[in-house]
Structure formats: structure tokens, C-alpha cells
Length: 144
Image (cartoon, rainbow, N blue to C red; front, side, top):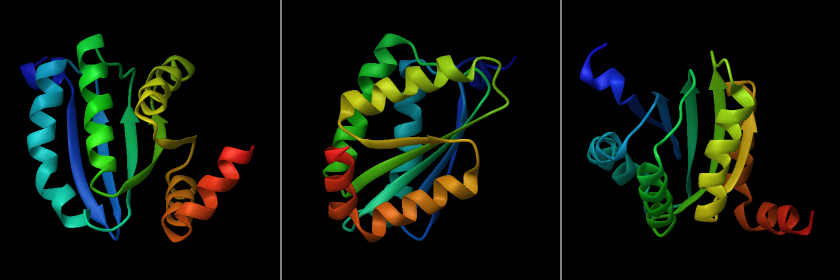
């Protein structure tokens, strides 16, 4: 296993106001720091208006505690740049409930509107709804 795979990988793309992050962990602090640099140009494409993240995670992807703290701060910083929600899709994972719980704790700590999905199309549809009616949806979600 090469060094990049030992510490996970991520690929980034932008479609409309959705930043798609495809990745596989595990991720340590150095990996998160490197991915922040790689994501910067993509975030610049969407910031200044409401935008969202589609996180597609493969395998048993987890973060070390230092990387959890860093990612939480990154999400909070992104929220100041217009980030309003994250949809998570977990694929090819032997422990999906554990990975979902682990990652959802990060989004909750960051105060991120978040939902997990089995299918990418459902995740995208939810994000598009969040982007179309961000304040309305947040108010409904808070009331539930």
C-alpha cells in the first residue's frame, strides 16, 4: 500500500453549487491538511453563494481524533463561505453503521445540516432542495 492510500485519498469536483468529495480513509491530520489545499480551488468556485457538499465515502473510512478536530473546524470555516449542508453516501463498507455514526458526529459538532443516503441520486436531490430553500428547510428540520 502506498503512502497516499495509507492515509486516504479524496477527489473533488463541482457541479452547480455542489462540491462532490469522493474519498476513502483512513485519514490522519496530514491527509486532511493536504486535502484542504487540494479542495481550495473547488471551494472558490462555489463560495459567495449557498453551496453544499456531497461526500461519497468508500470503505471503512475513519479519521484519527486530531483529524476529527481539524475537519470540524474546516466545516465551520466553510460555513462562513456559504456552505449550508452535507449529504453522505457510504459505499463498499463492511461497517457502514460505525462509519456513518463516526462521520455524523463530525457534522453535528460543526453544526452542519447533514443527512446520510444509500443512493447518490437521493443525496443530490436532497442537497438541491436544501440549496433551493435553505432557510425554510432548516426551520422545518429544527422543528422536528
